[in-house]
Length: 101
Image (cartoon, rainbow, N blue to C red):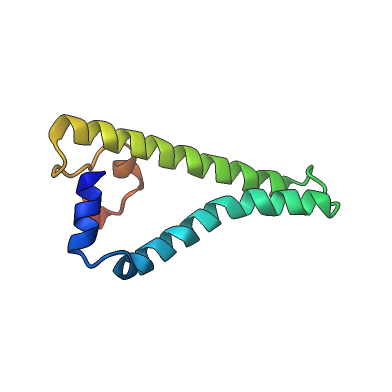
C-alpha cells in the first residue's frame, strides 16, 4: 500500500489519475449491467425461457470465468517468473492475436 501511495504522489496525485479511474468505473458498469438489466427485465414481465436471454446470461458467466482463469494464470506465472516476465501461455495464447505472440 505504501508503494502505491508513493507512486500516486510521483505521478501528480489523484486528479491526474481521473481518466483511468473513470475508465475502470465504466468497465465495472459494463460488468454489472447484464445482471442488473436481467433483473429489470424480469420485473417488467420478460420471460426467462427465451433462448436469446439464456444465451446472453450464459455468455456473461463464461466471460467472467475466462477472465478469472486468465487472472489466476497470470498471477501464478508472474509469481514464478517475476513481475517483468511476459505471460504468453494458457488463456492468453488461445485468446490473443497473432500479432502479440
